[in-house]
Amino acid sequence: MNLGERLFELRKAKNLTQDEVAEKLNVTRQTVSKWETNQSTPDFDKILPLCELYGISTEELLKGEKQEQKIEENEKEKNDKNNYENMTKNQIKQKSAEVICSSILIFLVAIAYAGIGVSVMRWNPVVVGCTFLIIIGWGVTRIVKHYMSIPKFEKTKEEEKKDKIVKQISDIIGGIGVAIYFIVSFITMAWHITWVIFIIIGMVEEIVKLIFMLEGDEENEE
Image (cartoon, rainbow, N blue to C red; front, side, top):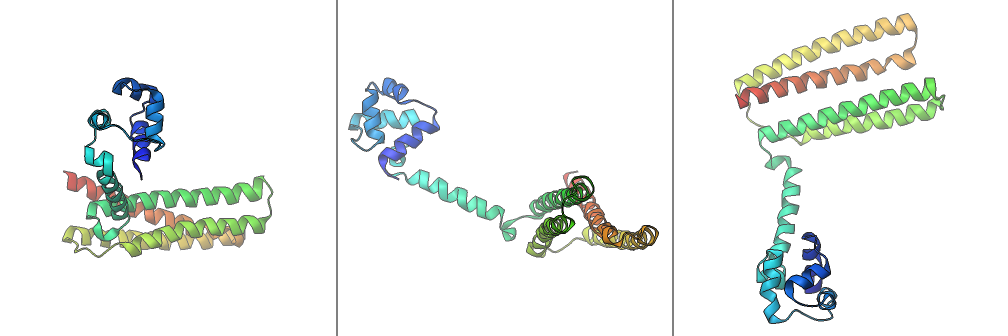
């Protein structure tokens, strides 16, 4: 980024017009315009006032080093947020909550889309079914990718105890869900629809995990 581009970006960041800058520096608007388009450079006696106006150092104005460093730091911070290895336990829990909640929303949207698309809008069942599976696959992929990316932490006894409880509850929910699936399927004979029950079971299990996860956060805060 050259000097003119830096001056333009700095002015925009301060929400100033060329006229306002010109007035503050006691120059014409055309002079400011020439600076920003690299047709001329600021006189020596205008460098310090420019730095004071934009709240930067002369080194940043002339070389842009600090600005480039900020960009690099922002990129590094962004990458760190997506790098599970650099996350703490609490950060991973927050990420898990985000993934679970958004994935559950995706599942609900998929179910609503399938129901409305076939029974209300009378769209082609094959197209609706394929789109439904794609949406569900997207939600499942997000959950699987998330849990496969989580590094292994040494769990406390309390965490291990909670994991066992969650597993037991999930097993019970799974068993009840399968029973409901067969009962509903035999009664309605709508085998082509009742398999959605398994998606609902998955959502309920994820909700249970989320509840226990949030309870753990509350205990840590106390």
